[in-house]
Image 1: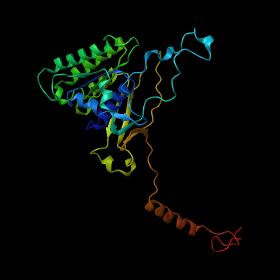
Image 2: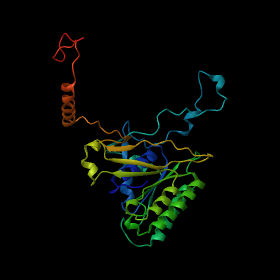
Image 3: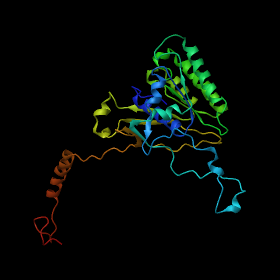
Image 4: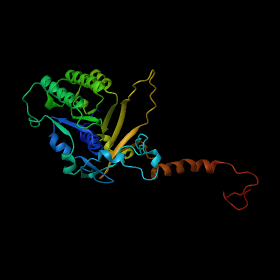
Length: 311
């Protein structure tokens, strides 16, 4: 994901990604040099419809005996059908309880280096990050059931990394190859507004299956425009996943915009308000008034328009 100018909204979307990992009990790696990863996971938004449970459901819950349909006892158990709802709705005004965070399998990177420290070269830091991603993505399963692994990297290639854009693109290529082998999923935010070479930005987009960019209205003339008064920025969809297909046909993407309220972050189709100003309506009435006066009246029409004798 390409960050907005100040990175506030991109970091908010990344926190949604990590909250999904906690709610679905996925293994998670939180990596950042701009912020403390331990504080990042403590400030995840909580689900709006309930609290996250810190205890896993019992593994033998599906092996209970059937007291009514006893003839189906020997048949293999089928998993329950998935609900029609996808994902969670989160409340930005509340955080997930620390007890639920402690019960999760969450890894942090870097573990022993405070944010902003400059103790290693840029290439060594990227190699260390890839090694941490490899350990999480290809590590042994804690349980018999497979566990989804999520990698969340915040502000990769920021000034604190001291890494040129070429090394960042190379690291993203290696990360993509790692995800292809292990089946893990990663979300990486990159401050591309600091890059001056558009060709490297295009190469970075091709590294990802899904590439999205956020354009914030903060500090721009659009923030004062009445046309964008209901929104805080635009969402640009640069690339969508097209795996296991012969010919990729991307649908036409509508203009998307996002807005942040006190409790939620929402993405909507951009709708500009209609022009209903008082000056515009008066100017239209003034332009049409001489035309009505100059129009000749019919022979059977009264002199005054709108008279009862008009037919």
